[in-house]
Length: 364
Image 1: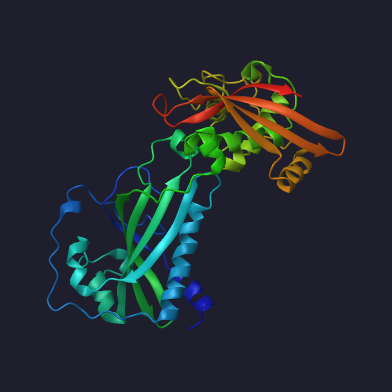
Image 2: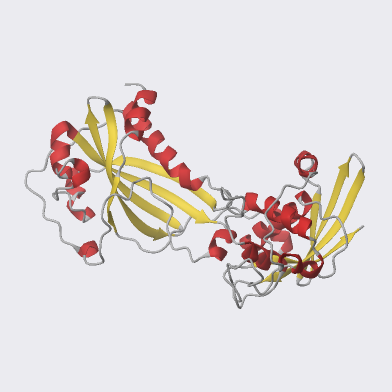
């Protein structure tokens, strides 16, 4: 069977999320929600399995590679959402030997409707299959952590029932375990180390500076939240959305605009709100009117983006005390843009995450 044939067969059959040990916000596992959620009591359930157990079918190396490809495709639906993950990868896919099945605490003998009223062990017997242990590693961006508490950073194990049917291997059922392990620590960027910033501060600083440039905010600002125009706010929201979950079908940012402006333009940490109608403590003055301002692309964004991408040194950072200065030098057709953006620092001891926020902007 070819890999493409397997993909069609596997994607045509949804997996049921039958048993979940973890709680909290977690990356969506590639399994459907048609199965009932488990209770806390079920997570400590003692599972009694028959003796002898059915002998699983071992996938060939080619089949296991194809299964891995399909599982990663499913995970990528969640992982590839813009601005949500720093790290998201599938680490391994392995067949679980029968001697380890009891330790999984999974009700393998329960009859389930999405398996036509049969149990997992029944299906492993006929048409034949195996249980797979799939390990993933994820790490959230500062923006994702800021929007809501996230509990699933690190290593997670997923168990899948894979069946070998006439059409090929299919993923028929799935369960998720949250291991809670720390993700591998990424290597420190030399500039981050020189600036003595946390990883979260360094990431938000780069995202904010790039969004300011793409928005064409190339003028003096002493108090950005009171001086930004409605057009500049719209352009900034559009540019910032590429590193903060993207846009909705209605054209709004996936993340509330009040959260974005508070995170990027204010030191305030006492209150986070999702009300765009001036409800946030740090909404720009231009957005406090009765009409909602939707994100819009700066007419010059593509030209600015091309210039930024062509020169990795277009933005230079320097730290003085508790502020960081980003100096932008950008040659455009109508002349060279030179800007200085000054950012303050918020430590993680005073807010959901450590981050930077724009204090002033100055045209050079």
